[in-house]
Image 1: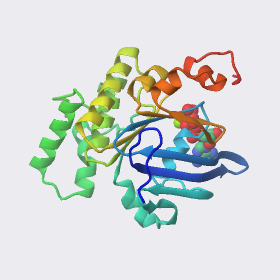
Image 2 (image 1 turned 30 degrees about the vertical axis):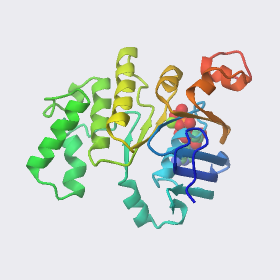
Image 3 (image 1 turned 135 degrees about the vertical axis):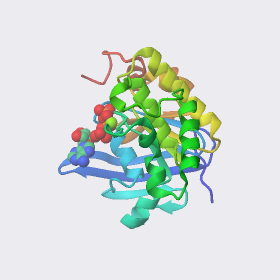
Image 4 (image 1 turned 180 degrees about the vertical axis):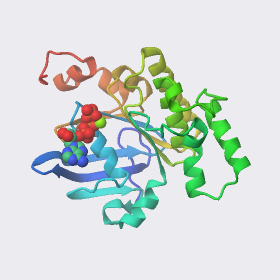
Length: 260
Ligand SMILES: Nc1ncnc2c1ncn2[C@@H]1O[C@H](COP(=O)(O)OP(=O)(O)OP(=O)(O)O)[C@@H](O)[C@H]1O
Ligand SMILES: [Mg+2]
C-alpha cells in the first residue's frame, strides 16, 4: 500500500528506515527515520556536522548505510547493485554547495555535458534546451562565458540549470544559498520555488542553514539532531514551536540547550 507522508499528506517519494552510518568509530546517522513527500519541497535542517549531506549522499547511492533501508518509491536502494544505483542517480539533479562547475568549460558545455554524455540528442536540440534553461534561471545569452567570469550567484544558477538538464524526478540542493549576498540568496530561493512550481511532480530536498528561507519555501521541514529525526512539520509548526531545541535553532539563539 502506498505510504503517505504525515506532514503533507502526499505520497512518500523517499523513505529512510532506521538508517545507521558511521565513519570508523564516529556515528553520524543513528537510526534515522525520514520521509520525503513526492512533489513538494522538503528542507532538512540541523547543526553543522549532524549528517545532512551524508543523508543526501545515501539517497544518491554515493554512500551505503551500515544498517537500515532506503526506499525510492517501492525500490529498496540498499539492495541494489552498484550498476543499478548508477542508473538511479540519473533520476536526480543535484545543486552542490560550491556549484561544482567545470572551470575550463564555458556555461554552455557545463550545462550540455550530461546530454552529450548520456543521450542521443542532437546539437540543435541541445542548443535549444540550454537556451531555455538559461532563460529559466535568468542567465540568457551567457553560453560562452566561463565560470571564473561569473559571480557566485550566477554560478549557482548555472549549477541549477545543469541539475535540471535531464528533467530529473528529484532535485537535491545542498546549501544553495550559502555564500550569497542576501539579495542573491532571495533570488535563489525564488528560483527554487519557481522550479518546483513549473515542474509538477518534481520532488525537492533542500539542505539549508537559512532559517528565514526554509520557513518561507519549505512544505515540510525535518530537523535532525544527533543523527536522528528530532522533529518534522510544516513551516508554521516550526515557526511557532515552544520546544527549547526547536526554538533555539529556528531563532539562531545562543541561549538554549544547544551549546556552541
Ligand atoms: N566520507 C566521509 N568519511 C569520513 N567522515 C565523513 C565522511 N563524510 C562525512 N563525514 C563526517 O560525517 C559528519 C557529518 O557530515 P555531513 O557532511 O553530513 O554534515 P552536515 O550536516 O552536512 O554539516 P554542514 O552543515 O557543515 O554541511 C561529519 O562529522 C563529517 O566529518
Ligand atoms: Mg553539509
